[in-house]
Image 1: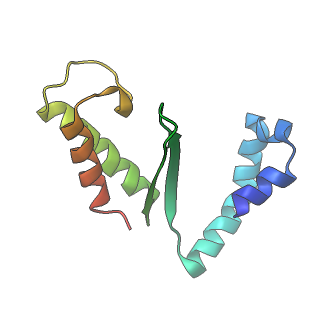
Image 2: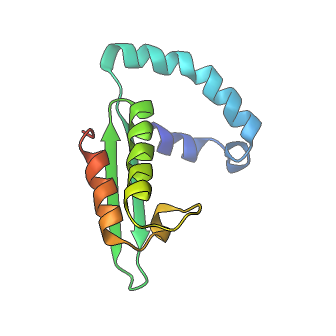
Length: 114
């Protein structure tokens, strides 16, 4: 992929430099928009984990519109916080031990995913 190529070609000190990456993003945005106009775009996130038992798991979600995907994900998370019996606070999703919570959030976001 393009990101793997960049990671192998661009020195790591440049990749870790926020200002350099902002400049690269601004520079490449017109090219990305041009290519997207011809071939369309799909955004995705892949998460790989290794459990305490050494088992490997992967999850992949792809969506045609990143802003919509983020909005749907946040709405599903908040909806579950409001309607499940979850204590007030700030959470990472993995900190909530309620299995129905996770299932409902994943179910909601997968409805619009590709």
